[in-house]
Amino acid sequence: MEKIALWRGLGESTRLGDLAVQSSRLFPKKEKRNEPAFDSSEGWPSKEVAEVWRHDSSPGWQRIHRGRAREWRNLLIEYLLKKIKTHYKVNRVAQQQIITDDAVRTPGATLLCGDDPWVLQKENGISYEYNLTTNMFSRGNISEKIRFSKLQVDGEVILDLFCGIGYWVLQMAKHQNPAKIICVDRNPNATAALERNISLNKLNKEIFEIRTDDCRNVKGLNANRIFLGLIPCSCFMINEKTLDLFAKARTSWIHIHHNFTEDCGQKGTRADTKLITSDCLEEVRRSDKIEDLKITDGRESCESENSGLLQLANLFAISLIGKRSDVAQIVLVNSSKVKSYAPHVYHYVFDLEIIWK
Image (cartoon, rainbow, N blue to C red):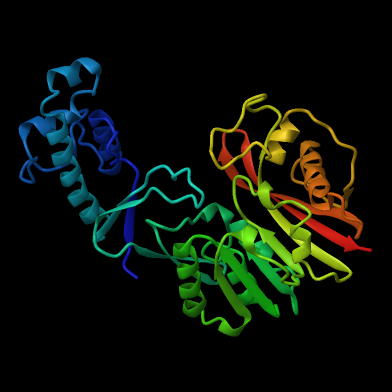
């Protein structure tokens, strides 16, 4: 697949002066300060655009050149795209923007040059192909992909809620021998990419069942293991009804992805995203509401000594058990830090073992 350059400095709100700074970092300068390392024979689109390299986009400067700023911005972007394509030897350039705060976390990427938005990323023996304008992908999850690929899931029925393009289940299908993998995601762009990746990696299609649906509509699937992979919060699925999705074998597993805020950060403030609702258990924990432990800490080791991790896992257990009488014990077997999400906020995975009566 053809390479693509992902550029962060070409946003509509990017100041002209910032464009110049980012461009000078990409292309080395000449010895003379603030002069771009382009031969004069290459030429600038206009004398005014060349001045962008010498002036900061201060309010005063913007007022003076208000009528031409947008025109110069567009000329500079067009010029920089040409240089980026030459510098990196690519025909496709995409612009990276902020992720949309919607139910499916639509990426903010836009294709600026080229026609094909599909890209390929290889990690731990799996090729992930996805449309960068419609699908999420995080390279920061590689450590967790490797860990999940080593889980002993032979003969199990796995239910992946919020499956995305198959971050976790493709690893298990490649490296282990599950009996069945049921993937659910409301985003049709995600399930389409997942089907494409199953074929790309030559995996057994017979073990996959893919549903484009709201996870709350799923019922009675007799799973042995459930993944809740929605970040920053999937608390609306952490309840006693979710346990009805399990086969009542001796032991079941649920892997909960959730954000965790360190005590030193953002004390007393709420996360600024629509994806975290009022019933978020991490928000409950941060309100200093301490519940009696209904979970057993079975971790052999932990990356953090922060007692808040156990408190959050305990809230998960309380919410899952509810008024049920068929759960003998819930054990926190592992809590692993995946990556940073925001200042003092980290993406964690909590592995809970559910032991039935």
